[in-house]
Image (cartoon, rainbow, N blue to C red; front, side, top):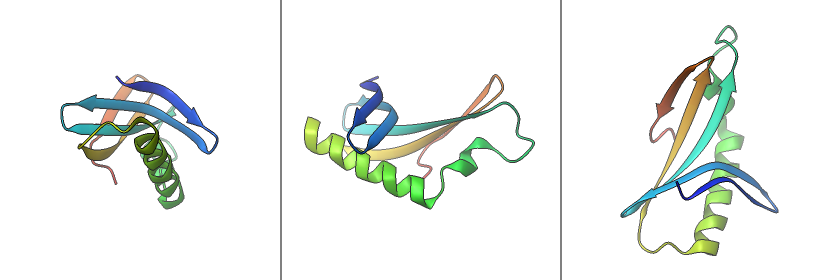
Length: 88
């Protein structure tokens, strides 16, 4: 893990992870139950755009070198965690 709850003036990224040649920005959404839909539904177009801007800010600040970038969503319902790799 590179960072947890990374913040800047424009917002926060829940998790930033890295391995050689890849940086992953992960949004974590949790719900007590899926009665009204899964938590991943909360990562709508507007949230995706915000996360892209924040990721760009982090990449500009940290300059990790050549790496592919991926956006994941960790959907937590109760004690169950589902990671959606390449969610957007």
